[in-house]
Image 1: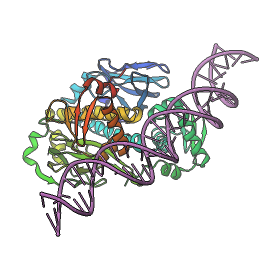
Image 2: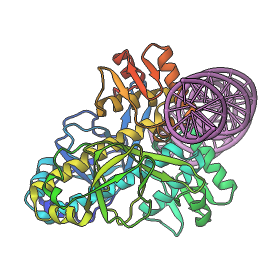
Image 3: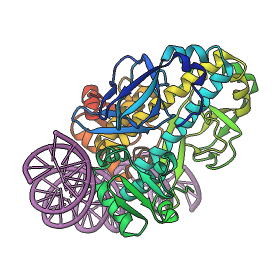
Image 4: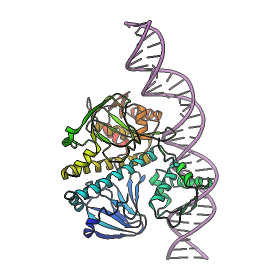
Length: 211
Length: 211
DNA sequence: CGTAAGATTGATCAGAGTCAACGTACGTGG
DNA sequence: CCACGTACGTTGACTCTGATCAATCTTACG
């Protein structure tokens, strides 16, 4: 997700915006005037069905981009998981730059391509993996994306409800999956803090090797 | 998925390749040298887990593009659902053109963005919708993408197994979901031929309106 | 210290998966 | 042209994973 320096050429055009925990950053369906780069904190994209079913599309951390897919309206809401600081760009500024700067356009294209690949990987997870496999895959993803405070440590900024909605499960099933991985000696769990004790076991539990 | 004329500027560089039903067009993991445009027929992208679980990423029809995300290897296999004709381009030809032609680069970017949006819509489907909702959404998608032989007619080129792997279900559950929609008077089913009798009912059954 | 929000665990339920039987259409060859 | 065989689709019976409902525990915070 991180796209180092992708928007650096435009940084002088950015407004800095800050949000508290649980603040609404973008509303689903609103006209998509801005896109964002996360400077610090964690945010989530959220979609709702009429009856209240909720889906978290992705979690975004420092360096990640948001809303750069130039849809006319935001197709999902964006909310702050933790206090968060973002740089806000006009969508048109990005488009204009891409329309005049080939190197910038190439980097934007590469970023979009890696987004597609990441999203497609999640389709297999949601369509075909068991609850425990999803949780193991999630921990592997977070370990790769979060700076560890100690080797093997994962400090999750989001609660169990967010994880559940990200993985297409319920809160209770997330708890039970974590408990199972703990009982198998693969991780240690303490609320937001996870310690990976057996990295290979975790990868195996996630069924992440294909073919 | 369709991107009218996107690759037209390169059409003189294309090789025409044809495949029979169930032929392998691209192997998962292979070096991604080519990308394709479907000229006729239907193809599917497929991913496998070690234990044989299968996921169909997408179905592609005439005008749709394939493998244009410039990954170093193909992240999923591609197979012919029906006899199919494709135009084959070197990935490098597309990249080179995008690196020198701003208008082409913009169209390629728009295409990628619409791919991302379509894929994200599928995340909600796989993560939060019931079997019958998935099937209703699938029929709505196919109705929009396939040329109808008569008003309300959907002639599915793919079998129940492919539909099941596309929706994260089993063959039996797909059959039962179709049977339920039939019993509710929303569709008529005859093997590959579906008739939509109650378009509004189908949309409602798919829970496709958000918020 | 009291309260509230979140996490965990247990008991029960239901939706989808599995296993199995049967039906139907199509293709091949006698 | 019919008989057979095969592949695919459908339906039924039963199972199981994960959802739901409920109670308890933990932690953070006023």
